[in-house]
Structures are given as structure tokens and as C-alpha cells.
Image (tube, rainbow, N blue to C red; front, side, top):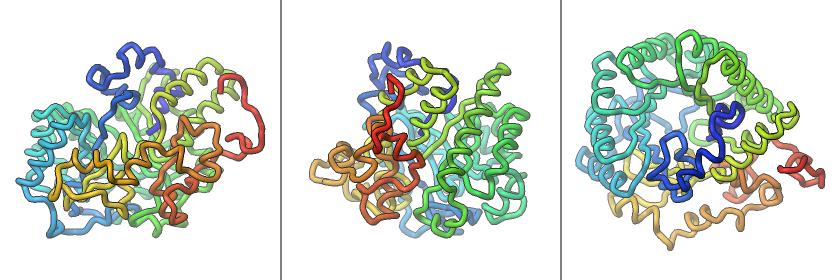
Length: 403
């Protein structure tokens, strides 16, 4: 996760992190990604059921709940185990999490246990009553999926009217006092909508947006024609950065992030240097080093509806264990799991251009699920990295001092 507003617009300085000693118990929520003792953020697919049929669904959601979903008792025990372990954030996802009847109870348990609870939803089931209940039990944030403007979103989601329903959910969440943001997966069909998304944020006072890079696992292969080229990705990230900075120049301070392509961090540093913003670039690079890059199997994990534990939400072909058999901490800290051990020392295992990259310490080798899916090798280069060989130093082209 790359904070465009933090790095490119300078809302965070390295000193902001260091004065807390990089201890997660001391850091405010917006700085948790820079802790050195980080426990994993958990994406929990609480149900496989969904009321939409999205082309890019990584979870292969279905119309009804899966027969092997965790029971209420099992789900409650999972929450207790996660909060007891010190998980800082539990992201309730799906499918559509609001299709699970006990999701409110689970969210409340997470909050009472000391974790921040956030919800990822398509918004169509976020009624006024549901929003008020979520606000009352302490939900920290609701992310509403909006994959472009109306034509793009409805085509991606497979249901006419999904766009208007999502916008209605934004209004509903705001009226209930919930912090709300947008979630968008970048595809060729919605590149034209980036400006419109920023206009929408500004017009509706939406404080946060996450732009996800498409990950071609799960249902992703159906979208091969929608995957961005490297040049298209560079252009999209540059536009996102420019639109974010333009909002800051007008006194607005949205939180803008990109997700699932760690190359965005070095790219922003190079972009700032090209603009003559050398100190800003140096600060951003230092923050990226503190963050450490991709954190699958370390700073992020996933629990599926049936209790399977994965290194992240996209790497569903790898199961580390099941919480029905062992508690989450026992699975996550298993020293006999060679993949987990290797993911926490990736530099020794990466191959090709990732291993040779001058930005390895800030990128961490990109998304291993993407590499495993594309090459059949979890240590192969991430095919979505759009930095050139010259930029990463493979051809001996030195960067400016400080990079």
C-alpha cells in the first residue's frame, strides 16, 4: 500500500514515525505501516456470498453462502484469537460482508478486543439502519467499491444501477457519521474515469480513495484484456499523484493510496526528483524504507470464509493452515512453514530483476502472488513492475545522490 498523499504530498515525515520509536502500540493508526514490530493486518472474507457478480472478484464469490463457512461460534473464537494476538486492523470483506447475518456482532467484538474494524462493501446493502448500527459499535472505516463512473462500474459489477447504489451508500455512511472512502481497481475500461473519480470525491467531500492495481488471480484471468500495460500504469499513477497534489494546493487534504504494486513508491520518488523536489523525494524514500515494501505473510494476512489462512487475500492457492485446526497465532508463527519463513527473508530467495533491483529494500520484491501465478515460481520477478532496467540499476545507470 503506497500513500500518495503521505509520500507525494508530504503529509508524513520520517521524524513523525521515529519519535514513537516505531512501536505499534504507540503509533497512531495512520503510521502503523511504519512500525518495526508489526502484527499483520487481516483481511477476513467472512462470507463467500455476494449480491453482485464482479468480473475481477479474487474470491470467486457466489450468490449464496458456502456450506463450509465458519459458524458463529467459530467466527467469534477467531476474532478473539486475532485481537488477543494484537492484530491492529481486521478488514471485514467477502463476498459481500453485509450478507453475513452476524457481521455486526463480529465487528463489535473486534472493536471491544482492541482492533480497528473496517468494512469493504459494494454498498448496496448499507441501509440507514445498518450504517447507524456500524457507527454505534465503533467501525473505524467503510470502503465502498466504485470501479469508475456509472458505465464502467455497472459493467464491471454486472448489475445495472450498482453505481447509483454505491453513491447512495456513500451518502448513507456519511449521514451516519462513518468515515467513508472509495475503492477502485484500475483497468483499461476505467482509466478514462480517474479525473471523474477525483471530481466526485471533491464534490461529495469523500476523504479517502484507494486505487488497486489489478491482480490476475481468482477471476482476474477473465480480465486479461483489461490489464494495464506498463506505460498505462505509469500514466495512471502519475495522474493520480498530480490530481492529489492539485487538491492539496486548494487546501483539500484527501487520503489517496495505491495498492498491490510496490513499484509505485520508487516511481513517485523519481517523479519528485524530475520535478526538482529533491528533499521531498529523500523523505519519501526514507518512509518507504521504514515501511519495507510488500508484506505478504508478514504485515498482511488473509482468513477465508472456511477458516483457511493465506499469505494475503490474492494468494489463495497457498493455504498455511486452518483456524479450525489451530489458532491463528500458531499458524502465523509456525517455524516449520518454509514459505512463511522465506517470505520474512525475501531478499535471499528472489530471482532475476527483483533480486538485482536497487529499490529492493523499499519495494520488497512486489506481489509474490502475482509472480507465482504468472511464472509458477513465487520468487520470480513481479510481472507488474513497470520500472525500466535502467531505473532499477540493471544497466549501471546511477541515480542522483540519496537514492
